Amino acid sequence: MADKSLIMTFLNEEGTRANVTLPDVKDNISQQEVSVVMDTIIAGNIFSSTGGNLIAKHSAQITERNVTDLVVR
Image (tube, rainbow, N blue to C red):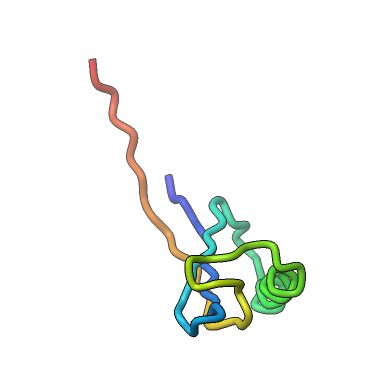
C-alpha cells in the first residue's frame, strides 16, 4: 500500500522554512490546486510557526511511502 502526502513549504516572518503536511493526497492533484491552497493558508493566517506567521510560498512536493503491514502474533 502506498501512502501519499503533500508537503507544502512556506517561509515565515523570520525567513526560515516551515512545513505543512497533508496526508492521503489525491493522485491527480494539480500544481494550480496546491498553489491555491498555499495562498489560502497564507491569506487566512491559518498557521504560525516558531518563526512567526507564514508569509510566502517556498515549495511543494508529493512524497510516496510504501507500507507493508505485517501480522505479528
